[in-house]
Image 1: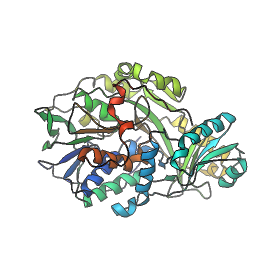
Image 2: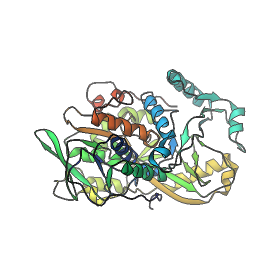
Image 3: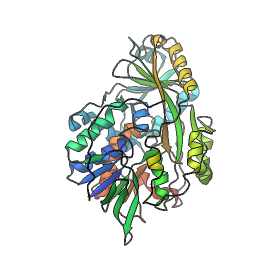
Image 4: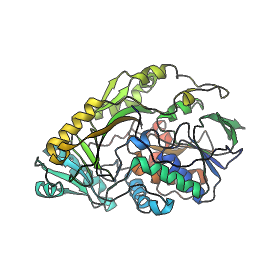
Length: 443
């Protein structure tokens, strides 16, 4: 089943011979990085093996939130929200961004206790997040057939349209001077004297001394060709989209059995954050120890299984020589088969609680592959052994909302400008320098 339809945007047809910076990957992190570099007058070219935003950047829930994030992500999420506020004007397009609030709906005392604990962590940042009781929750969810114990509520959190955001940001980046080439896989990086000298694409060579790798679920495979051990795995989540509906709650919210977001057209995206599948692949065993703490912490939220991805990756264990086509050209868009049953179960649970959804017509069900790290916090980092390279990956399902901030930070790191936030929490070396692995408590 194909993924959701994206807004059309023009791209470039000619591959330049040289550039100051090459960005690899045309998801929200990549196009945001290109935007911020181009605005600074940097000669930047972005190469995308398939279509812009074709993978997880258009397949996510469309939430833009600070609430519930790992403490290390909160400062960057705050900055990202500030960027989102003016993004439509900045890029001259429509991302569908609206500050309409997000709920984490509490069904029991454990939920309330977990959210109280998170609020204590977040107090220093001056957020407007608060715990609300049953009455206020009912007021903010008019027509709900279930009386909940309360919710963790952030009025200033927001939502946007994943199928509009990447094309709009990409168009803005091109207007600022970036060149964006699609259907152009980067096979690898060429070095001279230990430093980056070029990237090799299927369409030719681009001379450059700086690269930002924003390859999402593909970043691990790309790093193999550089002898970089990137501890990253993939997790599949499935999402359902309904047609327009009268009434229904505004904003976005989630319980243990469903999550919803109202779309611009009056329909909803529906999913279940507790049903995710990790396809067993060779990296599952290579990174077994790295991910053991996360596996214990997440409980049943991620299930293990076999899929077409398991088979495909058996033949992608080793890097391919740069003069040959490889996996990046064989798989232009990672389009996993969705778990339709779990998506429909989430809709049923949502409709039982929210009667307005009982008339919902299912328009589409899709799945996306989420790039995850052992601590579920992204890597946005330079690498000591690879001067000129910045990696921005492993966003662990948090990348859409934080994307513009992450792109700003990646641009800061590649140019040496003052970073928008302290990049230390996102350093690549945290997985190898003896730092204790920190797993965020449940929210």
